[in-house]
Length: 333
Image 1 (spheres, rainbow, N blue to C red):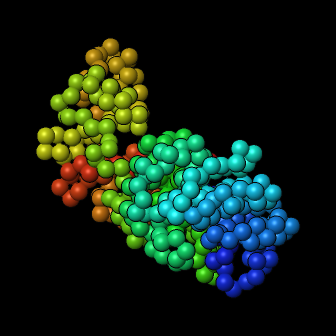
Image 2 (spheres, rainbow, N blue to C red):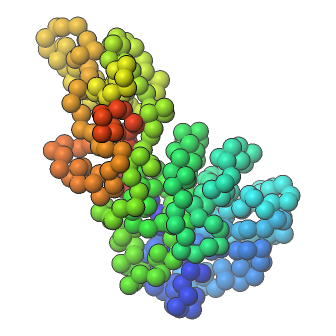
Image 3 (cartoon, helix red, strand yellow):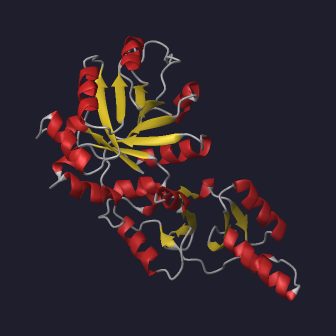
């Protein structure tokens, strides 16, 4: 996951000193906020003279058309327009070559992206725009999950409240870029904050149930399901697994691609039927819905095997959902 440094959040240094520090620590992008002010391009021209770090420009304006000419004169790598204040259609200049995105606040539905689906990415504002140091609104975990499912080929950027713990969760959910401002600049150093944003151990504010894939969005089969039905549920679910539960919704196991492979090998060696019992891992590693991120990480470290899918249960072993680590692994490559 890329880190986009919100440069105007550094109130201790002038722009040149801020960029020099970010350059030294090899930050991925420079996030430049613009509140309906064309003079932002003067700063971008200055940036171009002192660094090669790509510019990530976020514009809040009712009239985006007044920015088009300057965008072509002073191009940036990423440009985002905030949807809520727009008072005219967003008509991108065909000659613009950078990545295009639209931003929405927590209160705006993901449905708003449909009218702009030619864009490359969405920027989800997880705190109040312009409010530095806000707390990440956990409702946005659901929005990220919904967007990822609906637009699998689009990138997700997140701005607001991104600390070390939130950064880990966002990487796990497949977010491609996180904007960091006050957290990045208010710590002992930029290097220290960047290490926390990419670390794998964190203090906890959020629980597993805040960011898991909930049961209603998971491929699920009954303990009484036939082998063919289980395999079809996995195929149609497109997530590579199927949770198995009984009529009381208690988790009875999981069938993953690895479990299918092992069952097929056993069948080929013994020439026996492929039964549901042979497919289901009836003793999967599980995590409690109320466990913290720290407890989740400790569980993963104790495991004697790589964990791709971690079923989530409550204290009564009721199936609650799953944590899928596929996106986290991709993000670390």
